[in-house]
Length: 378
Ligand code: UD2
Image (cartoon, rainbow, N blue to C red; front, side, top):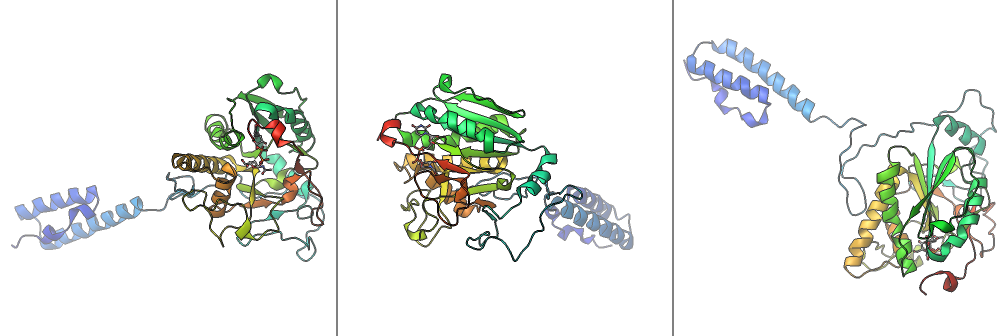
C-alpha cells in the first residue's frame, strides 16, 4: 500500500487542531491500519475544521472592540467606534414646529461638503433637542485657563456660563490657574459644579496658550474618560450672551473663526512652513477654526489634544513654533479629521467686530482686551 499523501499538506496554514489530526493521520499511514477510503473521509472532516477555525480567527472586530495605533494626524490605524449615544430618540408625542426642507436659513450654508451640519440660529429647534438629550442624562465638562492676569476674566465668564451654557444639564467646569485664590465664588445651579486645578505660570503667553492641549489630554485620561460624555475647551477672555446648548453636541466639534469665514483659504493664517507638523499648503484646508472653542465626545477630544500636543512638541524639537501655536495644530488636525459638526461664528464672535447680516445672534464672544497690559510678554 503506497504511503498516504497527507505529506504535501502545509501544516502551518491550518489550525493547531488540524495539525494534531495530521500527526494522527501520519501515524495511521505508517501503520497502514486504515483504508484510503476511511482516511479520505477523516481528511475532509479535518479540512472542514481547519477552514472553520481560520474563518473564526480572521473575522471582523465587533463594534465594541478597538485596536490602538495613531498616525501623525491622529487617525486610529484601525478603529470601529461604537457610538455610546446611539441615534436620537424623541419623546413620544412631543409637539413642536413642523420641520421643512424648503424653508429655512437662506443666506448661509448649513452643511459642509462632507455633510457635517453647520449650526446657525434658525437651523435647529432647541426645545426638540433638549427634549431628546434630557433623558440621556449626559454630562458635559468645560475647560478654561486663567493664568497670570487672565484671572480677571473668570467672573464674567463663569457667571454668564451659568445663564447660557447648557442650562438645565449636568456641567462640570474645570478652571486651570496659577492663582487659585483669585477664582471668584460663583453661585452654581443644581447639577453644576466647578473644580479649580493649579498649574504653573509661564513667561510667555504663547506657552500658556499652547500647553493647554496637553493638560486637557491628561484631565481626560485621569478624571473624565469614565464619567463624562462631552467636553468643550474655551478661552477665558470671553462672555456668553445667548444659548450654547445641546445643538452643539457631536463627536468632534469645531467653531469657525469669526475673523476669517469670508477669506480665501490661500491667505488664511495656517502654518505655511512644510517643516512644521501643522503645515497646510496653498489650495488646501477647509475653514479656519478657533483655538478658543472646540469640543466633542471626550474620546474624540482626547485624540485631538494628544495628537496636537505631540505634534507641537515634535515641532519644538526642531525649533519651530507654529504661527498660531496650538490653533495651527488644531486646524491641521481638523482638516484631516473632519469635524462631525461645525458651529458658526455665533459661537465665538469678537466684541470689537460689528455684527454681520448673517449673524442673527451672538452666543459667545471674546471681550475687548489690552494685550500689552495683560500678557506676560509682548
Ligand atoms: C487666539 C485664540 C486662542 C489661541 C491663540 C493662539 C480665539 C478666540 N483665540 O487668541 O485660543 O489659539 O490665538 O495661541 O480663537 N491665557 C492665560 N494667560 C495668559 C495668556 C493666555 O490664561 O497670559 C489663556 C487664556 O485662557 C486665553 C487663552 O490662553 O483665553 C488664549 O490666549 P489669548 O486669548 O491671549 O490669545 P488670542 O487672543 O491671540
